[in-house]
Image (cartoon, rainbow, N blue to C red):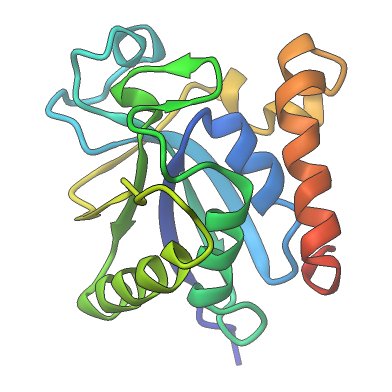
Length: 177
């Protein structure tokens, strides 16, 4: 019998960071960097970078719920980025870097809301992460896919992405591939 996969779509800063972490999670079968939440059809990276399309940089995670739960993915999400900064993660500033959970169904919406309330207990500042229905997901250009794996010595990857991967592996040893 074929496994039944599910999808999660999350935004928390640069998609390279989220992609690099979620590719390390047991039960995750695919992670695609892309764009969601905007009003432009088939947006390009150059368009999204202007902040005028309304899109966020996101990852769409395909996972096996018999191995990793949606709640576990959300726990990782809250841990590897700062959900208390509005429209930014570190030096990446703009609405395209906002913290957002795009839910695929009502069950995910409820789990995301519950998870956000639980995560708030870990932060002194209010969580600003939006929870919104996924309308459309647009995959990013090919050169953005698997960016960290293909470019580990790139300055941004070394300084920003690698520490997030390390943080994941430290906090979630049992979930790392």
